Length: 244
Image (cartoon, rainbow, N blue to C red; front, side, top):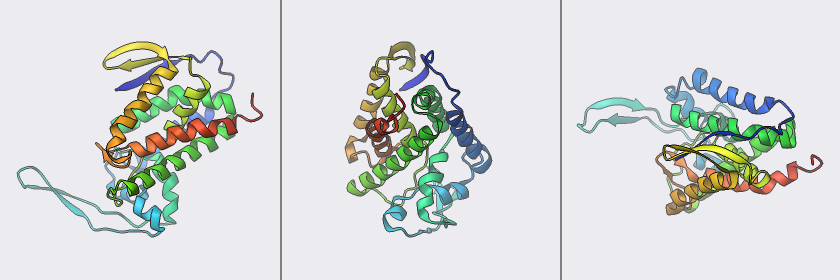
């Protein structure tokens, strides 16, 4: 496990208003719309479903009864809900939703530490477009790897991980030797970004190897992580044009 604590921001010239706004919006959605992850109807309405993206059709499924290990009924988990607009809107809505406190905490921590440097490098508006584009490309990577891996295409996916992975890809390209303070395996150390984020990416590849990153092992869409990271690594140079 790798968690970032901070990095060197002495060269930051602009206030990262877009980055802070993205963090704020994610938290607002999680608290007030997802009800801390307990509003399953909202979550199953606006999550991204690979089969819907592949077919362009809105899919609605029945609820599923959940039992404990002793066969005692616990609750009914709702099925996929109707999407009020085009299913492709879930490329954006799913990007601002999370599965639980640990999920949103980890994602927002990475975004806070690394996103401000990318916004400082390419500017506010370009950073917003870059972030959203990486999120979309990460989701497309998840859909395609799920298809290739013959995974369950009806499992909904959500989270800002694809977009944030793109930010990490951009960071490791632009600031490979910048010192980053991280917590790794319960101890704190200060290492170059290329080591910290390279190791993070290696973990994503290893954990996703079984199905080309397509299966959500432990609820994690590794295909989105890998796809988003590679997308950020590649396209960041286009967003730097005229900025250096």
